[in-house]
Length: 222
Image (cartoon, rainbow, N blue to C red; front, side, top):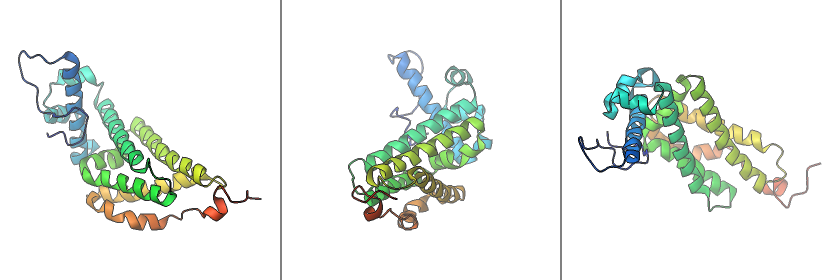
């Protein structure tokens, strides 16, 4: 395992056995990072149905006892791995749009970051986009919350840039829902690498509000 899933603990190779000077907190954090990376690797390869505690600890290189020190069960481990991936994805999207004021530019940059994140790590993409639907009610709730958070980013932009637009929340929900479904279908059939190439087509599918009608200088709708 090479730590490519970005669990935030640098080199995820095995720690030295026997006596060492590593702090207890470092060891615990390293173990959690290895386990979360293993969850993403297994779920992203074998699917949620193939995710077991045995498969996780085999890939992570930790004992069963160590797993249960940090996680209640495989559902707990999957949920934390999912939360980690969504946090990283949101960070990428927000960083891409942070310094942009133009609405089309913000949509292009944010969507481009979203698609590239998924294409760069197909296992992570499958875990957070496809397998979350098979992981039970808690994961489904986390998925719904993540989609709502992304939709809120768009809705907030619409409110700021087009204060007279009638339903920013519905617009955000529609855009995020449509993009998610396109991503889901590509990832499910093993074509995550195609996602960045869909950027222009997806952008063309959504109409940016007319600033003359909905912008700050437009007359309020009657």
